[in-house]
Structures are given as structure tokens and as C-alpha cells.
Image 1 (cartoon, one colour):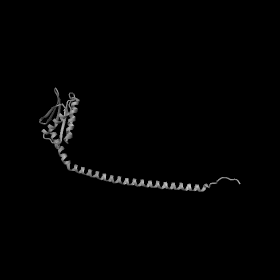
Image 2: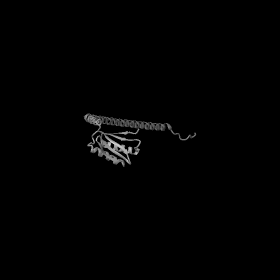
Image 3: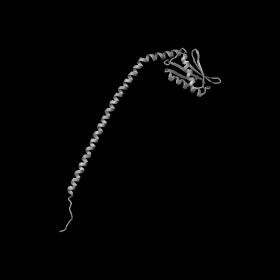
Image 4: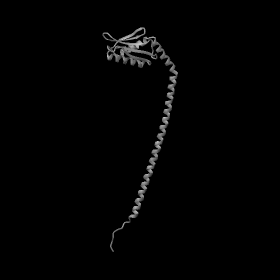
Length: 189
């Protein structure tokens, strides 16, 4: 008889390997399902938080809109009366006029219906602002009055930087006086 060598029975070993492989695959599938479930729960939780915050912000916005509308309703008559008073005074000639003129140097004259209130030489924007404020104070106007103003200048003679400086000063005064409205009139041909 011949010796054929040691015969190894592979079927039992293959069965064990296949069983372990199936076990690992099932374990990984359960972990993946658990991860999906956790992710879905987190998404649902964040979605609920987002909806709650959205509802809170919407309610707060509605409240602010309601308060604003109530404020407008309460003060609409006061604003309308102040505007009408300013328009009536404008029709009677009461208006603040900023007259930009030149002789040897550029000057700004602040006038009302009675004549000159103040004037300044065009050195700086700050000087012009203080001149306009002084004129408003001398006229008895306060920060809540409706003030109609016109900057009048000759575009053929006025320097661009001077007009720009006076406009900027008027805008700065307008930030301080809530209802200060200024228009710009170029009288050149």
C-alpha cells in the first residue's frame, strides 16, 4: 500500500468559516440599522426644535408688527398735524433757506421769512453744521419740529466741493433733527 499523505477534512473548517462570516455580516447589518435609527431620531429632534423656534420667532415678529402698527395708529394724527402745519407755514413763506454765495470767498447765509438768521464762511463742514444748528435754535425750532429747508446755489459759480460740503452738513443736521427735510436748488441757466 501506498501512503497518500495526511488527508485534511476541509468541509468542517469551511462550515465554521462560513458561519463566522454570516455572523459578522449580521452583526454589521444590525449596527448599520441602529446607526440609521439614531440618525433618524436626531434629525426628527432637530426638525422639532427648528419648528418650535420658527413658531416662537413668528409669534415674536407678529407681536412686534402689532406694536408698530399700534404706535403708527396712535401717532398718525400727530405726524399728520405736524406735516400739515409745516406745509401751511411753507405756503406762508416760512422756510429755512441756505443761500450759497460768493464774493471774495464762499459764504453760506441761513435765512427765514424775516431775513438772515446766521452766516458762515465755507471753511469746514463742522462750521457749516454749527451755523445751521445755531440758526435752528435761534428760530425756536426743536428736534421734533418738521423743518423744510432749501439749499439755493448758482451752479455756474459755486464750487463742487462747497456744494458737496454744505449738502453733507445739511444731511448731518438731518440725522440730529428727526424731521429736517432739505432740497437742493441750482439756479444756473
